[in-house]
Image 1 (cartoon, rainbow, N blue to C red):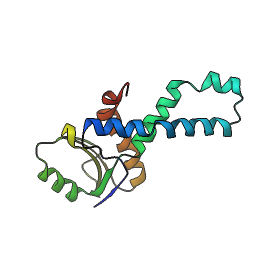
Image 2: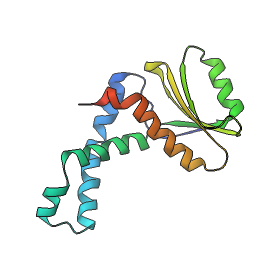
Image 3: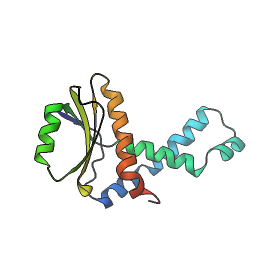
Image 4: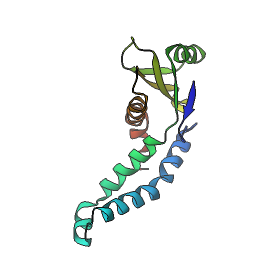
Length: 141
């Protein structure tokens, strides 16, 4: 098993702090992307809304969530060690690999199974974790 990512918030406050920390980066990414697309000032003002920057912040935060990558056996061992956690598992039971993200303050884990496309599974899991756990918590953060 291996772990990758940056954000593994232990508390709600830690999640909010991590989310806030990516706000400036999201603004820069959106601004530089619009510049690369050669938006003039009028088009920028029309198309780059607060909602666009917020979407970038959410995507950036989700893309940095820590995930564990391992075998089904490693996932099952983790579950055995954390029996009180609410688990949301997506995917087939007939594959060999699992990625999962743990949210200690919610005693929750979100997992996705995969056979071969690890990067796709990791990206999907991070979006699912954001939507299931962090989205409502961070609204208005």
